[in-house]
Image 1 (tube, rainbow, N blue to C red):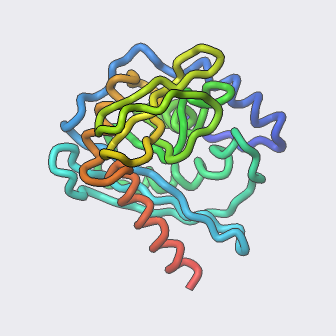
Image 2: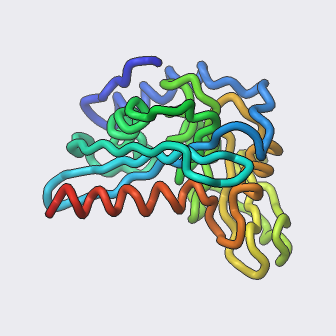
Length: 225
């Protein structure tokens, strides 16, 4: 695992992103959906106390049963700057991943990978630092345009930034808002979409994100009394 580098300001953070982006691996298909482990990671904040809690939940990809889970609590040490969210979250996410007692397999972030102004969002950053295959599945659009996908589950449309496809808007449930899927590290876009659909069973968000979100919120409540 590569050591995390905490920048002193936004300009240095962008330079770190630009340097690490060259290490993103885009020519691997990634693990097949429905096999092995998949891990959801998410964070919750207490802004008044400058606390961040991260959760990592490992699921069996075939059954979606929980295999292992871990949380970590840290301090927020970097300001909120659009496009630089990783520097607020990754140190605590790495700590949670380090506590896992099972192989994480593919990691699913509630965020972006290549669908980012510098093609290096949270999912890419986490992938380069850990060496794991990582995808981003975000709830809201960020820095791209897209046509609305069709109304049925599985319908999708490309996310475009200056004409480049950087991800897909994917309908995971009939007549429900799409999610926004992008490659982070060591997986392909078609595979990332397939994983997203395999993990979204009856809900808009992947089960990995739902479990990690619930766990980090519970852990934050416990940490703050």
